[in-house]
Length: 259
Image (cartoon, rainbow, N blue to C red):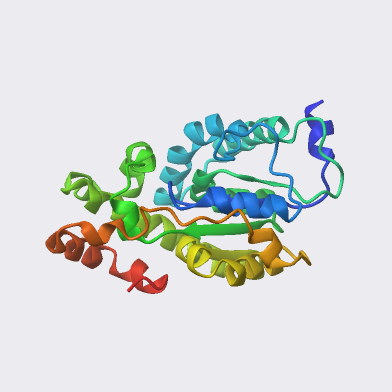
């Protein structure tokens, strides 16, 4: 049964990932409007539930092997087997051969090299939101779960929390961009949430071209994009704290056009 489900698809997936709270939900809806099957076992944010346990079990272990620059073959075998089980659960029994499919699970951004090894022709959309906004978000689940692997022991003691949060945002997104640009090339796309809100038709058009879908971007974007009131929340914070955040994450903020 497991093998049958995996053989049900003959195309590589679309993966949508990000640091938490970046706006992946709206990108997932746009992909669905473009004809992508992102699974039926999802929560209200369109997160693929089948991958939750897999991410919980493997992200930190995978990051540790990357830090050591060593990969144990038996460890990777177990990770691959667990992934195939999660993937079969995600696919279910109704996936059609040659369908456009994939998943939206923000934390997939941590495992991009692993997923690319499984699917060399995968497409990856990295969703970004201004790291200063992200630093003051209430959603700091990734910092809590993976900060110990991403940050140095000195950084883990830094205060206030927004400083640790923006360091994680910076490191994870820079590493994903480095990998995507070097290894995925034309199958890698960065979508800034702010661009979706400020230029919805133009940005949706970029996404549709990346997905190789010939649809009118205005009709796809209509009704899907609504800028939240929290955009630019960092501007209400003390200037001294914002300045500290900008110094800490200067390279990422500049690379992604926020400075």
